[in-house]
Image (tube, rainbow, N blue to C red; front, side, top):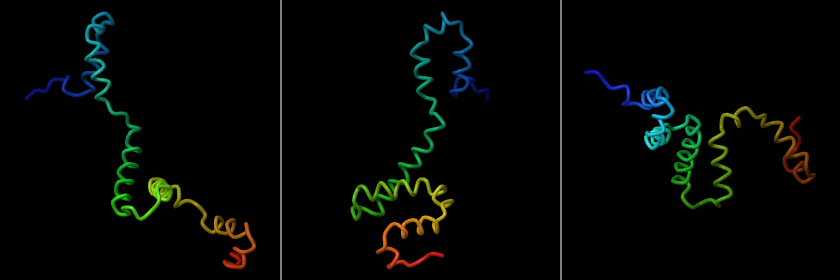
Length: 109
């Protein structure tokens, strides 16, 4: 069974680009539909973000404020960057800001 090259977006795009501009002008609505059918690769990350947020929201229900939920969602989406952070250095910086923290948490050295 032979498949038509116009059955996928790449074939349709090649077909339209091969036309003379005058002829392609007659198919302007088809060209618009073809452009709409092509989903950009960069949409994968937002899709993952929404999917992660939906899972978080289901699990947490309404036990958190919106600000906290947003922060947890950002941490979940960018967990690979968070894994590379030096936690000890962050903790040292946090404790060194106030004397009360130093007395509560002590020294990290």
